[in-house]
Image (cartoon, rainbow, N blue to C red; front, side):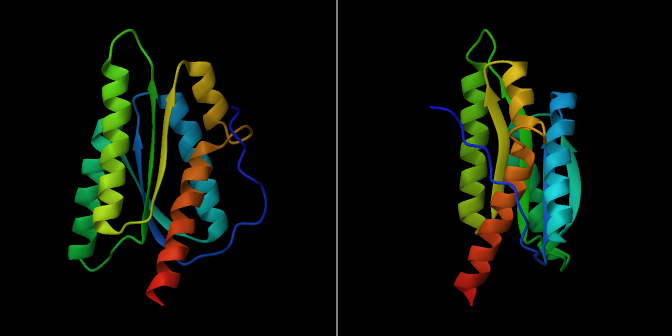
Length: 160
């Protein structure tokens, strides 16, 4: 089944302060993902901080530490975006990293009630990664930022 491309159009403005954490294991792919996320956040009028970690497994821990630290300082994040890429290799490391990073992000989002966009690509090769990361193609970084802001709007509506 082919993946659907995120619809293009106007981004609903939102007042939000967003944490973007990017795993830089594959720098050129990370650059593309970040470019898409930042463009979407800028278009939405959100403010954001970008933090870098080595790989996808570090994403949940970094987000937890930074979200809790910001809240303790009285400057909470409204949402978070996780960006990264895991490319299948010759060992089972791919399954461990992709499954555990996704599980960690989901558990964190639910436990903290944190609107979180998961922009961690899990692909077979670099060609698939670039097709998904490029802003002009699938723009999964922008899609992750859009998901975080969509969840934030839902959270705000639920809280009244």
